[in-house]
Image (cartoon, rainbow, N blue to C red; front, side, top):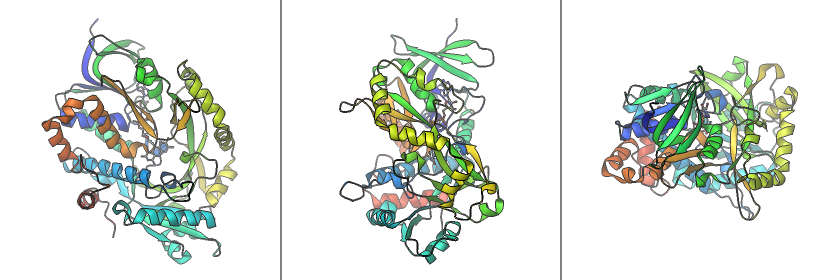
Amino acid sequence: MSIKKVDVLLVGAGVMSATLGQLLQLLDPSLNIMMVERLSRVAGESSHALNNAGTGHAGYCELNYTAERADGSIDISRALAINAAYEISLQFWSYLVENGILPSPEKFINPICHQSFVWGEQNVAFLRKRYEALHTHHLFEEMEYSENHAVLKKWMPLVMAQRDPLQKVAATQVKHGTDVDFGFLTRKLVKAMTKSPNFDLKLAHTVTRMKQYPDGRWHVRVRDNHTGHSKTVSAGFVFLGAGGGALPLLQKSGIPESMGYGGFPVSGQWLTCKNPDVVKRHASKVYGRAPTGAPPMSVPHLDTRMIDGQPALLFGPFASMTTRFLKEGSVLDLFSSLKSNNLKPMLSVARDNLDLTRYLITEAFKSHKERVASLQAFYADAREEDWELASAGQRVQIIKGCDVKGGRLEFGTEIVAAKDGTLAALLGASPGASVSVQAMLDVIGRCFKSRMESTDWQRKLKKMIPSYGESLDENQALLDFVRKKTLSTLGLEQE
Ligand SMILES: Cc1cc2nc3c(=O)[nH]c(=O)nc-3n(C[C@H](O)[C@H](O)[C@H](O)COP(=O)(O)OP(=O)(O)OC[C@H]3O[C@@H](n4cnc5c(N)ncnc54)[C@H](O)[C@@H]3O)c2cc1C
């Protein structure tokens, strides 16, 4: 039996695998890369435009990235890290646009003002403190703040229409926020790779199992979904960029680093606006504050989107209960992921998060009227008949073992890599696609360590990402230089 040999096997055709593939191809065009995707299309799961919110997460509007400490002060460290990581993505995408690898930028990225909006004394006090903590930092110096109804009417007319003039409200805004069609971006990244004779895209093929051989190579079983026949691919390096499907595959790899991990799936739904006149009246992303007890991914937001070149208006996501790890997954996914090594953390998270489970179940049974009522807190005039429900993607939050409680639920992203650097997986969902470039650089740094340190790769990385190896958080002059360049190259400059 002939076994196909590749240097790199990318499992899944979402934004993560596409970004890693593109980076590796640019660093070493001679690498033999295969991408295997179970669906018959690229970016069919979380990376598809309607399955995520398309927010270029930079910490400008997402209030859950700036937690309030017990003493009332605001912790901005996560917002700074996410902002700097997003600048890495912007630089890489600029390089790809300049070199004709990506098409003209407005097809996948557009400037959309990022706003946070809150009401009520306590929330206003929080937003004011958040603004004061952020805007003195150079990464956030363009942030504006107002509690004035007249000003806010100009910033967000739809949100302020019919609002009680005595209601205490506040908002911040950053004009150079972005909306990204991650589905389009992923498709173009993959399309560009197919131009190389060293790249092989296998759609409608599923990775079913894998085993490491004594020579360090991975023998991966790949099933053709049409014929049902399986073949073995031998890979020097495997990336499990399978989104919600990454955890089950990581478990199948059996690497010691995979032990103890579990997943908590959460599905999502949007209200999408059917009335073009309403769509025209709003032109920003307005993020609110998650209701008490709600998970961070359920922060409501009213979003102007550009999907396939057309403006759209979405509200949500409404998080909800599911046992599937992928939108096109199986209801048995959650149960099949229970293993002796993760049972304790999974049970402990189930025990400690009853409020979250209750919240997700309640959300799942909300009526259309109740969902529109949540929207009316942002847009008082919203009419039920102008909005319809659409399903978003699935997120699998990470469950990890810990000494104190036995297990804990995490809302971030994590790279799990084998000690010998032959396999890596990306788990978790937030801040997601926006930081795909930084995340994939981390994978390369861990799994291609010596090549990453070589003069050749360092030189190439510096060309693709001018700030590579330096801190944008600490170096204002460098930030000013790269931001000016990316905003101009990607057409994101705002007057
Ligand atoms: C509701 C929601 C809102 C979000 N909003 C944002 C946002 O505003 N901004 C942002 O930056 N991020 C956002 N995200 C997160 C972002 O969408 C994800 O982080 C990102 O798309 C993940 O990309 P991925 O390549 O890891 O996974 P995916 O895009 O899910 O791709 C994984 C692929 O692997 C395939 N696959 C799975 N198992 C196998 C197998 N065994 N064999 C072969 N192929 C397999 C799947 O079919 C899929 O195509 C959001 C996510 C959700 C769900």
